[in-house]
Length: 248
Image (cartoon, rainbow, N blue to C red; front, side, top):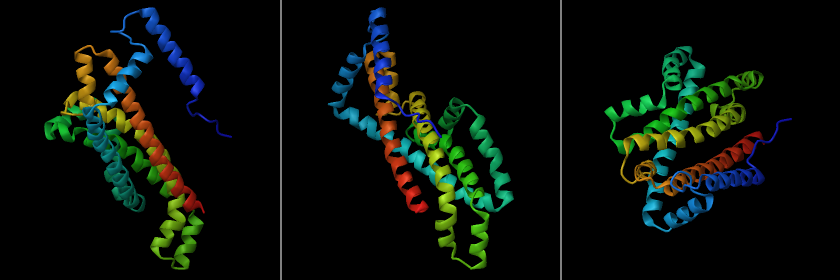
């Protein structure tokens, strides 16, 4: 029986108390502000238009890169599962993306792209291998007996996909999406910190660091975490609904 690994409120409260205690012991708000000061600054920022513009600007690009990676990984996994040549052709690319450091890709991408497209490209790049490999594995796990029966009775391709492949692939796709959602936000914001596109979350983080605005740094970090968690919950809830529908 799988153990639940969700975040518990009591655990969050404990770590907030640890943070508060460390802040009080250090006594230097410039180095480590208290949770209340970070929350206060977050509330102040949330009342301004530039705050929401930054969240929307970065969120649109990071989520866009994630969705593009989901589409590309799924579409390329289908021919790769059918033809060995396609699988072998894509293998070096996927291996390179998995092993090369994110910072290297960010710096290389800055040679080819403008900074405003950087977070979309990097988010796409970080998520694509995970989606592609998981969907490929899901296709391989499709029930062979059901596929043989579908061929014998000449079941239309659309019905075969919905009835056999989709139930097999969706759990693997969900796992890939769960991993990819965290990676795309971290990599996307890291790309913005290096590329510094105007109006982005990464630019706000960099500015807070340069001017020693530590409460702002914690506040913007909290925004990134919250945005990631909210989108993850919404997206995975949609995938879970699709899994239940396919299973039914």
